[in-house]
Image (cartoon, rainbow, N blue to C red; front, side, top):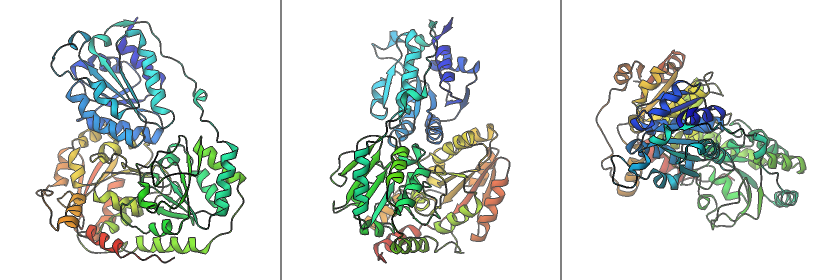
Length: 547
């Protein structure tokens, strides 16, 4: 006979979980003890937020729920930022929290909080484990709910006395084919094709759902058959290769950008796997006059600027394959090529810039040169996210991971660690500003301890650049956003990593090559030109469309 903690770990093994990220605590000791005798690795980190970020990125890359573990009280609340990130960014995740024993919950008790109620707004489903023999059903439900339909996080709260109780329960078997996604209705497919056939300038808006559904190839085939240009949200980068003739690159700024020229011209938007949290429709349909086709697994959210005439519901990949199969080929349109050429020329303008501190355009150009198409960049949140989302060329899905729904700072380093564990044969870069890097830099020790290879490219300007940018736009001055010099190479060396400091624009590309070839953790301190942010605002404010 095993105890509940051992049965829970057996259930994790049955679900195919390879590792659990977290911190040890008194109330989760039974689970840690069970993990130590299992095939599931426990990866101890230095902050629960980082553990949740690691589970989040694991879920994004595998489409199987990543798992994080904390103790009760502050341990559990520290998980919340990463869990909320998975909730808004639609990543499968299962969070496990230790809890006080049942006999302490009716009164004020040390570190006790109602964590189930606390987690309810940021999970698809959560519960407290109260009866030993329900552990298998609870774990199976958590993984099933997390991974089906639109994915997201689930949570199980485990009282310490329940974890130690005996049980004979065995993991539940499950059959992946039992949860196959429904196919779209033929009538809606035909209606959508009629709308596309009548449209003068249709455009595809591809979102994170295309990545989640592994529908990239189907999207390319659909776009090629019907000659419809494609723009992707920040979280949809790579669904159509950057160099494809029909790729109009990324959209997502809350200001007019080059792709706005395409939306201005469009009379029909085919929204494939698009979540409104990625890019609110009032930015690309401000006059509420565009026809919309919604291709997703679930019905469209209600919004005055997003009222689809047709909703194709079902598996996104299957829907796109049917549309490509049934659709009538359309002739190439020269205005698509002209728009793509305009966008590409604007984005490539500063690739050879030699000024110092480096312009973000130059940094991104060198990063792309140093990486292979399938290598992975995990971006943090801040001004640099705007630049990499707009400019970084992607050729495959899930090669540029961006937190955009919840937009949580601090995700890049722990996320990159998870990415390297999931994809050990690819090179991985954590791309961050110094503000985001300082939030979870303690995980350098975790990376060194795991003996993995990755590069942290830190754009340094000694300020919260995005907030500085917004303050200057609104008030003409910046307040409470700066800090003193930090010696990042020395910090890296203190953790057992290798540090680089860039002192001229010409040094970055060689440093990237050397860091990427280094058999360990490398941190690159790269000064970035803060003033380029305001220059972008001025450029976009003067944008004149060529078509």
